[in-house]
Image 1: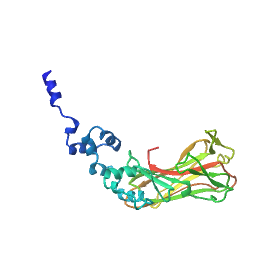
Image 2: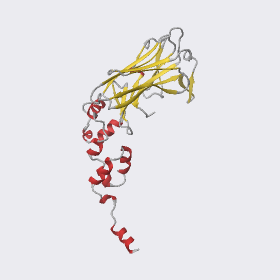
Image 3: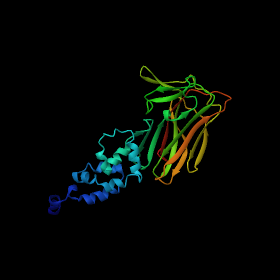
Image 4: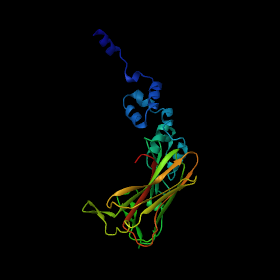
Length: 276
């Protein structure tokens, strides 16, 4: 019993560990685990600011990503906090807008890859300026506040392109689509489906192509009205994160034997493969 009392009296606490020792432990953990452990004690909290811990968690091209994240930010804004790698990491994990607010990217904490969402307003949509075919409708169900709604058209063509230095890895592309017009009736969500037609006659074709020759095509019949669906376009691989990759993607249905309508196009999502 005396020995156990001695251990209690002379035992060491977490704050007795050196910051260097704690930092070595934290460096081997994933960011969510680090954020939990730094709440244990002052020593863990201080060690958690060490640059060498967070530099390992940052993409190798993080300088390019920070520059992109600061696009459109007021030049007078104080960014001195980004001198620490922990703050750089935190900034990249936020949704960072660019291209006039029509595109956003953020760092995924689990994979270390980049996610990106591209608004319908940043896409090239055939007939978008003709109100007989398309119009932009406001909705709380879009990250960007509006979606492109198709009333009716013979020739459906939605295209986009992104030039971006993604960290090395494999990425998946999705179109976020909704059959029917989402709306509200006395604060209750409803789906207006009167204009849905033509999607069961022919499939739509998705396609992606990259500047280094990668190409994927797929076809699918659109169904499931009343719900937002992420339709997988395909995957592409980034081998060199120092180069800006050009990635094009499209959604088409150009069989002019019938019209189609009642479709909402919200955005295009790019994320590390396997997240969804």
